[in-house]
Amino acid sequence: MKTILFIIQKEFKQIFRNKSMLPIIFILPLIQLVILSNAASFEVKNIRLSYLDHDRSAASRELISKFKASSYFNVSSEFQSKKEANLQMQKGNTDVILEIPIHFERNLIKQKNTNLSVSINAIDGAAAGVSNVYITQIISSFNQSIQTQLQTYNDGNATQPENIMTIPSFWYNKTLNYKTFMVPGILVLLVTMLSLFLSSMNIVREKEVGTLEQINVTPIKKHQFIIGKLFPFWVLGLVILTVGLVIAIVIFNVPILGNIFLIYGFTSIYLILILGIGLFISNHTETQQQAMFIAWFFTVIFILMSGLFTPIESMPTWAQNITYFNPIRYFVEVIRMVMLKGADFNEIKTKIGIIALYAFVINGFAVWSYKKTN
Image (cartoon, rainbow, N blue to C red; front, side):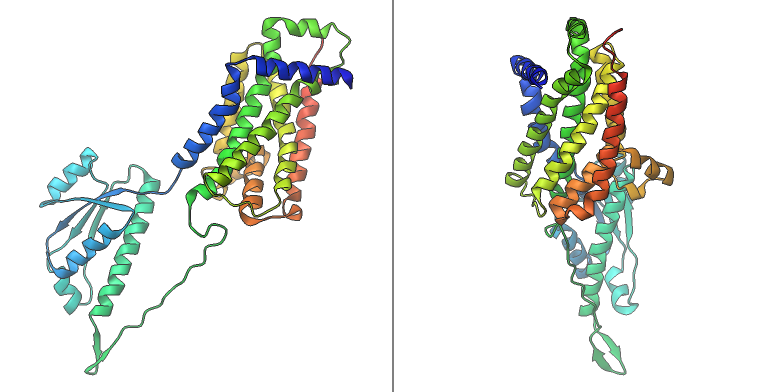
């Protein structure tokens, strides 16, 4: 036990002795959490909308005013011809072109229907789909409002059209704040990247400076060396998690509805798995550049297939099956379930068991692959 404590003490001294490494460990991840949580959003805002009003009636002006009142649209300009509007969209100066035909109001009054032309820049298909939903909602709201004003007549008696009002109830994120959804996921990303990169370069650095050979000829046992090398980064991972949770609460006002000790318990097991992956990488690389490249290669795959940015349900079936072997997927699901839904142990015990099993297997391979002799 004393041997392990001496190795841990040596590792902490080595970490804090490297002045250039301290900002990378403690400051940069926090800056990333603040920046990425504000930047990584699938909300589509400030949609540049231009219009052609061929009718110039009260109804057409009311429809345009609804788009101007929306926080999602930025009504930039009015065009006189469709050719000019198309040219501006081709140049990238506008995202949506709304064309109101002539006799728009007259057809609404007499024929009870009319047509609108909406052209959407769909280079970004996801953003175009969201923009289409916003436009449809505004036009539907306008249609409901105008039909209320234009009373229908039945047998000479004015009858008011009946409207159905829906009152939505938003669970777990009442304000529909996208940061509430993204901050826990970004926190998972930072804890994973920091722990994996540092642990994967740890033993490799010893190889490069030549101290690993000196350690290997000492009576230090394999398990003592591995525990002593990885334990400091396990502690650092929990420290980063703690600071990230404080930032999530203080800056982003993200709630923690569940038991916070569940998060720490799961993270403790998860970090053992990630450190095992880092150890396995370091055992099979000779330079820090190699270790960094391999760690980054797996991290990118894990992130893209974790459900952090895109729903797993939207992936092909074969990709969904692969995500069951992705540890980040389980961490993202657990931290969101506990923080936002207030999940208890019984609801996440299956995921804890899976991560514990993966940690046991990966660390077994990592320890087996570490050789004290060349």
